[in-house]
Length: 236
Image (cartoon, rainbow, N blue to C red; front, side, top):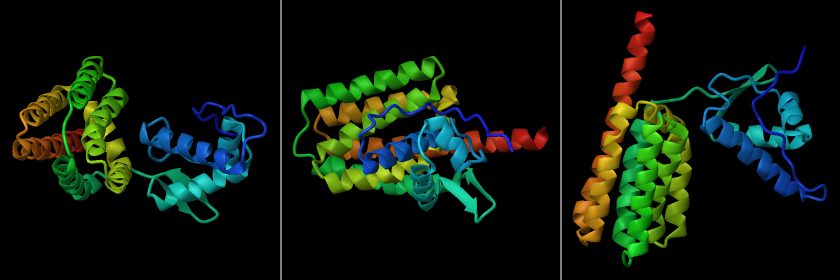
């Protein structure tokens, strides 16, 4: 059986790299490739092909695939195949409410809001707007993450940050597909601006409300896009 050519860049690490560092780099590389769609849902993942593409041995690849399976990003049938997991849109319906609740908590925990923080949010929102204008859903998702990261970091609660970021990994593939529909996704920029405006005025209740509306709007727009795609496939 011939090896598949995977769209993965060979890793360039120093020869004296610690084993644990190599494992983390391989894991991070595969995880990012799955999240951003470089490795699409259903892609067969053979450890030998991946090892060859990344220029590493099979052992760190196998460890990375096990971790990704535990996180739901990879599915496997013992001794038969390993594949990139399908995108579960229903996960967004379960996870988004948890995220907006925790981010709302972060807004309340922030001891103060500086001009630098407001500038970072505004800048991230402009990056989001630009990414949507040029039709780059991956860049749009990253810019959206940067915007919300400012809210999380302001709480100065590392445990809260870790929980929310772990949850976001599970829905980021959905978000990238959602930001592909730029006609509706641009509403996110306006919702972000409302959050910044409320925080700047010190109206945390309004900021929390705007934040929830942003997440609810994203969920609703994503559902509409998902239903439209499903109907299009059925018609085709």
